[in-house]
Length: 173
Ligand code: Y12
Ligand code: CO
Image 1 (cartoon, rainbow, N blue to C red):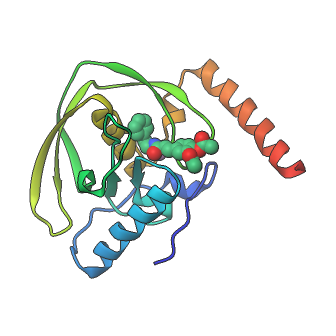
Image 2: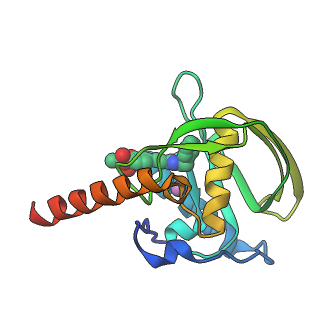
């Protein structure tokens, strides 16, 4: 399966992803291809809509303390739902669909998520730290929300100005 990353301001990133009903070979192929493209681009999280598949599918592979990112730590979430959240935290986020931009975003500090695995089994995960932030960032993608949508009006204006400048620079180089 040949995938490419959809980049802002592409309108496909605004689509609402649909619930997965079939846990079949096609879903497994999509998950495997998402893992490869995420690693190829040095990502730590990816939602299916970022590769133009509007399905409630996301993957996460948070680096360890030694910066290694073994596949053993890969988490695949299908149809995730946050059932509990607590606290607040701020983290400078980046996104493979908005390359080169990093912004402070406020998120819940810890979350409990119900989801299904690639075979349709129901799971629950309690997360905090970077994993909690990454889950919320990727779950926003399933609703067509980007991390830049969470910025203050002034911060977003600054982002748009800088984004236009970078696009112009890319065009002229
Ligand atoms: C905390 C905050 C956000 C997340 C969501 C997952 N985000 C990523 O995986 C972002 C990765 C990223 C990688 C980049 O590097 C390349 O494309 C080679 C990048 O590109 C540049 O900055 C040029 C931007 C973002 C998880 C946890
Ligand atoms: Co993202």
